[in-house]
Length: 189
Picture 1 (spheres, rainbow, N blue to C red):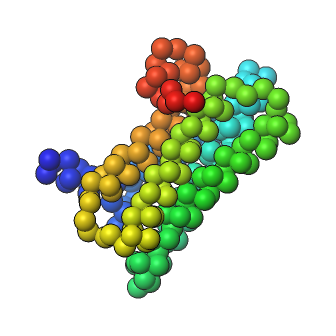
Picture 2 (picture 1 turned 30 degrees about the horizontal axis):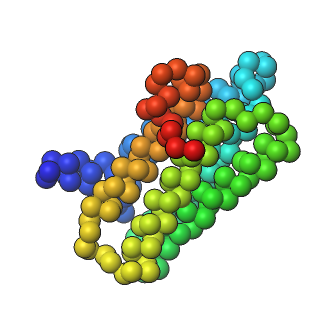
């Protein structure tokens, strides 16, 4: 168990040291590659417009929320209140819900076809929003800081799982048409 805790602290815990290379950088590069690839496929008329819209919204959301989290880390490292900064989780939950609404509105306005990628992204984004909200509720509303550390581990796993899964399905949307779909897309309605 200690090995998993050490691995978690090394790879996923954000520190003021700002390492130049991390899992988040790899995910951001995958999202950017997926967006560029999607733009190219849409330009060549080899991808449905629904997939392009979905990838564009998710990539934009990830980049904006990453910048928001970076600003919060800089705020804390400059001596800002960590308790105040915990409200970032509520902002992230709200931003995820907002991205779902924007994605739906864009689809109803520009694309009348809702592809499998659209539904996969909706489910994963709502799962991510729920995880952010639960952590915010634990830290801010209930004011439980140290107890129930397992919630932080579950939260980190969910965020990492959703981020990597979104990167995979955006890079390879055809994966949703195979039997591997059960690994990358939640089967709940």
